[in-house]
Image (cartoon, rainbow, N blue to C red; front, side):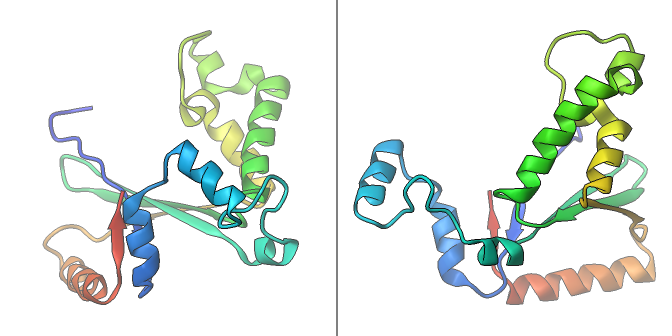
Amino acid sequence: YSKEFGYNERMVLGDNEKAARKLARGSPPAEKRVEMREAGRLPKQGEGPSAEIRAKSFFKMMFVGESESGQRLVTSVSGGDPGYTETAKFVSESALSLALQRDQLPASLLGLRGGVLTPAFAMGHVLKARLHNAGIEFKHERLPQPGSKLWDLQRQGLRTNRSTSKLAST
C-alpha cells in the first residue's frame, strides 16, 4: 500500500429508496434478530428463499484499480445466487484447490507455509480457473485514461447516473 491508497464500497440500488434506507441502517443486533424471527419478520432456520427465487438471484462485484500513473483497470466478478449457490462454489473450489493442487498455488510456489493469506493471494490463478469452470464469470477491461474524450464522456455519464440512481455507501 502507499500513502495514496484509498478504498470504498458502493451498492447500486436503482430507484429503490426503501432498500437504500434499510442498507444504510445496517444489521440489527443479535438479540433484535431473535425477536424479529420469533415475530415472523425474519425467516427461521431452514426457511430461506425458494429455489425459484434463488434461480433469479445474482451478484456482480466490480473492482476498480488505478495506478499512480493514472492507468485504470476494472475487474468484475459475477454469478448466480450469492447466498447459497455461489458461496458453496467458492468454499468448495477453495477446498479442492488446497487439497488437489497445493503444489501449483502461488503461496506454495513462493514458499509461504503459514500466516493469514487472502484466498486470492494464496490460491490465485488456480482458484480463479476452478471458479470460472464452475460458472463464476471474471471480466477485465482497461478504462479510458484521465483527460481523454472518452474519459470525459464516461465521467459525465457517471454523474448523470448517480443523480438518478440511489447509491448506498458501506
